[in-house]
Each structure stands twice: as C-alpha cells, then as structure tokens.
Amino acid sequence: MLWIAIRMLTGDRQKFFGLVFGIAFSTLLITQQLSIFVNLLERGASAVYDIKTNDIWVMDKVSRTPDVVYPMPATALEKVRGVPGVKWAVPHLRSAAAIRTPEGDLEGVTVVGVDDTTLIGLPENMIEGDRALLAAPDSVFIDDVGATRLFPPGEDFIGARLELNDRRAVIRGVTDSTPTFTSQVTLTTRYSNALAYVPGQRNRLSFILVKASDGEDLDALTERIEEQTGLRARTRDEFARDGIDFIIENTGIPLNFGITVLLGFIVGIAIVGLTFSLFIRDNIKQFGALKAIGVHNGKITRMVAAQALLVGFIGYAFGVLGATLFFEIFDDPTFKGFYTPWWIPVLSLVSVAVIISATGYVALRGVLKTEPAAVFR
Image (tube, rainbow, N blue to C red; front, side, top):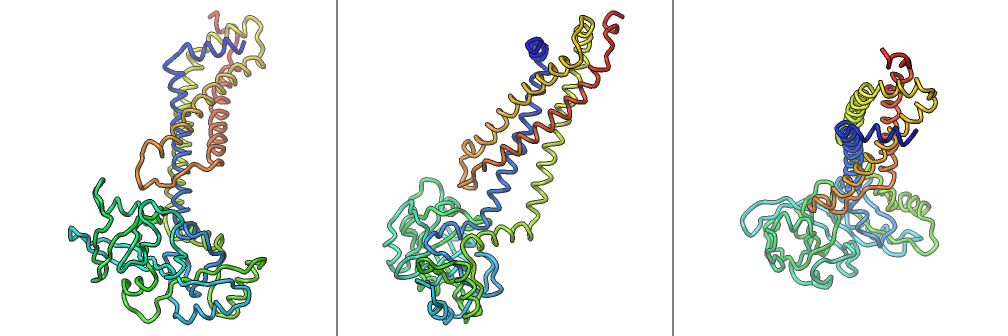
C-alpha cells in the first residue's frame, strides 16, 4: 500500500515538485539565515579569537568589547605584572584612525598595536610576508579582507605607502584575520608605532594581555587582578561572550533575522499546505476507492504519512545542501569564516517535521471523512 501511495504522489509531477520546492525553500531560508545570524554574532568576538596566546584580557572598568574601549594609563601595565599568578603581561592597543590611500581616498581603519618584543597580539597565520618584517620602520600588516577593499584584485600592494593620520605607513605583510563585525580594515603594527599613529591623548593603553602561571585558576586570577588593580579582568571566553552580547543587546540583528526565519517557516506551511491539500483533493476518489475495497483508516493514515515523509526528506536534503553550498558558491570576502553549526540543520529538521505534520494532518482529515460510497456517485 505504501508503494501505491508513493506512485500516487509522484504521478502528479507538478504537485510533487511543488511540495518538494516548498520544503526545500523553507529549509534553505531557515538554515541560511540562522547561519548568517550566528556568524555575524561571532564577528563581535573575532578580535578575541584571533589572539590565542593569552588567557585573560584586562581593561578599564567601563570597557565592554574589543571595539568599545576606554584607554588606561601606561602605569596599569606594571600593576598587572605585579599581581601574583601572572606569568607575563603585554600591552595591546586598538583604536580607530583614518588613512589616505595612494589614490587619495579616505578610509576608516582600526589600528592594532602589538607588543614590540614578542609580537603577542598578532594573528597566528600570515598570508603574505614574515612576522619579522614588523620591526622595519613604519611597517604595518593589513588584514586579507581589508586588502580587497583598499586595492583592486591582482594588484601587488606589498610596499604600498599609506598616509595614516599624517604619518607614513608601509604595508609589508598580510595577516589571516577574521573580519570584525563592522568589517573595517585592520592595520597591525608594533605598539610603539601605534602610539604615534593614533590620535594623541593622555591615556593610550587599550588592553593588557595576560598569561596565567602554570596551574593557576583563571577565575581566581581575574578576581585577584580586579581587587589589586581596580581594573576589569575577563577570561578569553568571557570577553568573547561580552562582544556577542553587546551586538545582541544594542543592534536590531536578532529581531530582523528572527522575522526572516519566521517568514521562512510561514511560507513553508503556506506552500506545502496548499499544495498538499490540492493533491489530496485531486486524489480523493482514489482514496475513496481504496476505502470501498476494505482499506481501513489506519492504512490510509500510513499512506499519507509516507507521502509526507518522502516529500519532507527530499525537500529537506535539497534545502540543507543549498544552504551549505551558499557560502562556497558566493566566494566573497564578506563571508570569510562563515560556516553552518551542526545544531542549525537539526533545528531546520524540527521545523520541517512541524510543517509536514501540520499540513499532513489537515490534508488527512479530508481523506478520513470521505465515505466509500462517494466514489460511486
């Protein structure tokens, strides 16, 4: 009987493909939009994820994220180094600036200053150039995504000179960095150079990167740093979460993406429900004939369930495949590092199950109410 149900479904090609399209489109929209939403939120913590050598970030009490920071006095560095349990502590600067490109255009950038001696704070991987080149005078490294914004494709920009706040900056390397939430161009240089590039003010130190001694409890160390210095200390995971929470609380992204996902769910129900109802209505005589020859409602229910499961499986597979290939097909620097977390396809599967169950139940009611004698009238 299940084979008859499948043949009834695939026999009407227009409605069969309409059902598959409805499920696939809904799955694609939910999976793709949720993936973009999650990856955009993680961009708020990209600066934290790119630096893997430290355990703790120390900052002024009012600082909240890598991009929302209030500078500290230089004396704060020695205070942190004097806290028991601190293996080492280095300065880290992040500040907004403006550059004038060789073409004369003005572009906003983020200047990152890393420790002069150890280069702690520099992204792990280099796409072009050597880390040692950062010691050269006026040397800066540009992030790979930012380079695509400043220079035409294929142009050799290594050695290019930029005017950074009325000072010369020479690009000597390209870092493999995760773009920030604002996707602003990032220029990395030594801390001493960064102090000269950013606008002058009394306090310049943005963060202090701390490494805990071996066997030291990080939570206990952060509390100790706060008690002895009066500053704010956060572990890497906590500070990354702060950046994500800031985007959630201060932007309309969650609401906008939530509306889009809800619309995908509603559209799926509308398309699949309407098409499935039309399919059942067109085949009501066949179901009536089956009931007339003795097929009971239990088998009819299993037949409709098999039809719904087949459509749901095919549509879901196409939808997830399309959402996964989306970031591969659109090879744009904007989507660098974007991926689909494992739980999003699971959530999409639950949504498809709800859509299939709801529409299948509505369509099944009409079949179960059909009288066998109706087929002979």
